[in-house]
Length: 128
Image (cartoon, rainbow, N blue to C red):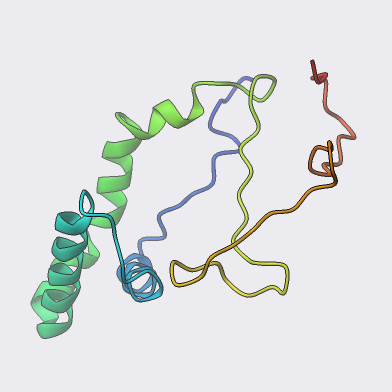
């Protein structure tokens, strides 16, 4: 591919970042102990943003440059394999169309001795 990032989703919407982060933290209130510190920091920044218009203005200018900085470092490793080597499946809703959340437990069931049904119209990779 000429541009390896052409199909990379834009995860950061700077206009909605803080509101989206607050919703995600509310939907997933329990975090692993390794993530508790960053979750606490995120909650503190959200509270600070809500407390004062000046802090809101300051914090609203942070998400886009932070995403750009991550793109130059850590995030790039997600895309190490190209489209012929790996497919990353992302599902944001359950079978009824409800958003996935940390409060629920999910089960995926496939036919006995079967792989998940995946349409492969233009795939040049064979299963081995």
